[in-house]
Image 1 (cartoon, rainbow, N blue to C red):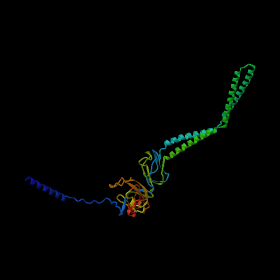
Image 2 (cartoon, helix red, strand yellow):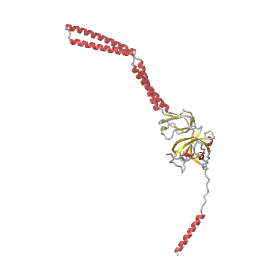
Image 3 (cartoon, rainbow, N blue to C red):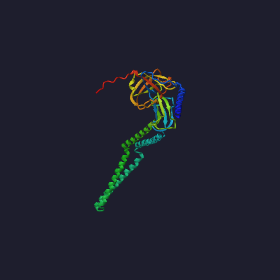
Image 4 (tube, rainbow, N blue to C red):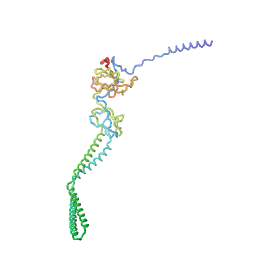
Length: 363
């Protein structure tokens, strides 16, 4: 009896469960999409991620060396010309070296002026007097030698006295020769080799000053070409790390014409060519369609850097850059509200270039 009661209760439970499931099923309404899906308009097409960029590429302007920024001359949106100052780095360290080098330069110039001032008029009389004194000493020594020689003949002096007198004569003659040479050297002026050395030192110091001036000028960061300031990420008083820093202080770009750079997967690259039609579609609440024309296909495959964020996107692939211009506008993209760095969906018509059949294998 208990067994049959258990079977009946189980059957009743199953029936109740089935009824509850079938009658309690709730229909989930289809929610409308927040914005239209980006659909490939071509029946046989290739999709790629595109990035809007200025016609001359984005220019990331960095400081040449690490240093303190003392002044920033431009703001976002300013139009700059080639060579226009953008920001100024601290030059006090270089200024101190210039002051030291300029002081050394004056010293080198004074050395050359001193060479040209030789001989000094007041230096000649003492040397002339020294020559006359040496002559008088020589005459006196020669007279003593003559008297000593006569005295030896008469036996009043010995041969040793004559030798001593001869030595005095030799010394007097040497002193006269030295004084005469010193006077002649002074009257001849400076030595030409000394002038050449002084002039070489002067030119070396001038070169050092010029080199420091170039380094000082380098501390003024200038625009490499005409363009518009797209981003300013630096203020006066901040310290920049130089070219190696991750975020560059200033970003420039020529907004007179915009391009779209598409990243075509290497597996789809064979399906497009220079004659392929292309369209772009902006993202967001109000997508705009762009008519694109291929400018060039860059013959270099590189790893994918810009990601679209799709779950199906492959990151371990290589892409080829296809550069395109916007057709039917002034090229600035102003009527579409697009700006450099913005991502757009790009679609190519793959029917314009059909893949060729493989030829016979060459052996």
